[in-house]
Amino acid sequence: MEIKQAEFIKSAVKPKDYPLPELPEVAFVGRSNVGKSSLINVLSNRKALVRTSSTPGRTQLINFFNINNCLTLVDLPGYGYAKAPPELRKQWGPMIETYLAKRENLRTVVLILDIRRKPSDGDLQMLSWLENYNIPPVIVLTKCDKLSKLERARQTVLIAESIGRGKDELLHFSALSKEGRSQVWQKVLQLLELGEPPA
Image (cartoon, rainbow, N blue to C red; front, side, top):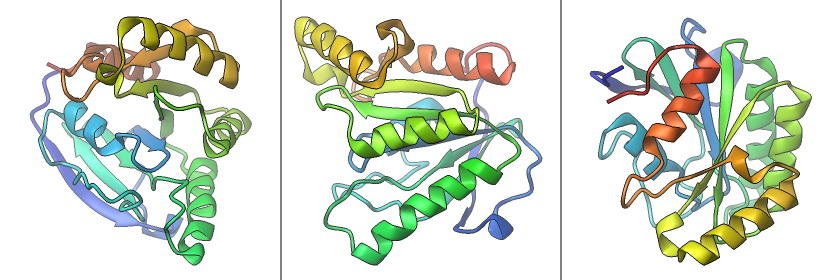
């Protein structure tokens, strides 16, 4: 599957504003500053499909993107940014959980973790929600280029243990080298049953 089209559809907060559930959806979620925007841009083969920012917590809405008219990528708000206004932080959890609970065409969620950090309470809450709503996760460890091979192996084991998963379930990714792009697509497309990874 070659990516010929990748374009923004719309932003939403409440289910009544979501696009029609015509295509299977893959949602992306993670704590603020985890590299979510960079991952989506690399996967979609676009430099700025999703705007990256040096300011964590910029994604405050649910953003929908059409890929080849055959699936939708969904950028969920980043969580855990302490400097965001308290009112905004209170909205993020319900906004994300409502989407997970009510979106009938959601097929999988890519949960993004920084390989250098211990999973946060927010990450563990997200895994709990995914389990509760029977949504299979694709767990991606970002910023892998920032660690040596030894540190990377050690951190992978620690993260796997802390979230109760096998280390083989965790996919490594680097936005800099694009390492892991095909593996992430392969896992996503297996869950969507859509065939080969995009070129």
